[in-house]
Length: 327
Image (cartoon, rainbow, N blue to C red; front, side, top):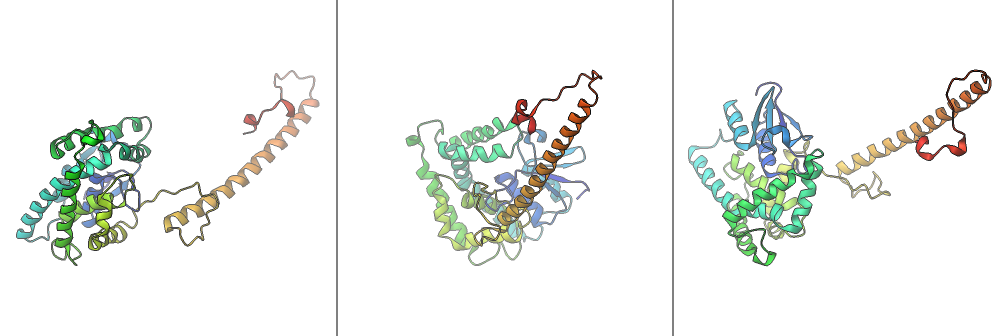
């Protein structure tokens, strides 16, 4: 890979490196092949040129979306399927197309189409999109979901909820998961002893659907009944994305202690850094207030000893000074 390559993706959640399917499967390409690319999660989708993430930038050149990025990696010698036998390669492509028809519509409906769920999904994307674009860009995913659900699901997400044919797309998704569980068996990867693009696709769908917290997500409990798929998700998250994994912290727990055994390593690190920040902020506030008081006394003495100078500067007394000025 050429020097200076930077991959821009949405920051993750729930211990995943990204909240987004497209970003997650590109990250799989990068990490599986060990391609030397800098990963940047502080990204603006407007700069991609397509209004979406991910995109890979090398100098002034941009490669936007999964297809372009994969094509570049293949060209640069980081082909994810290079160790697959020809027979397995064709089979994996067939499986990938089949999984797409079964999971893609479910994914888009329950993340972006289901009204109650989209309030949460919108917030996830809005927090990861710079102002003022965070008011607009999350809704573009809902527009995409509208077309996908209409074509692949056979109903309009703008209709009343009772007209949404969720039974069909949920049933097909569950059947797909059952087949995937049987195919994986006790293996580490779906095709042999090495990873493939198909592993990246399955992980990207299932990891988000399994980890995300939504009011309605019927496939989540079904996945729990497939321990080999759960192990597949957790193993990749733990072993391959250990450094990129992210969990937001609930800062409302004021009494939380870094020594709490229920905290994750990420939460513990956050609380420790937060404690240090509060201590430094407290010291800084004391120093600032002390300096302000000393300067005020100095200026009062200086002003009283130079009454004959009309310097045009007047300092308010304590009673007239509001708290905003103190800050």
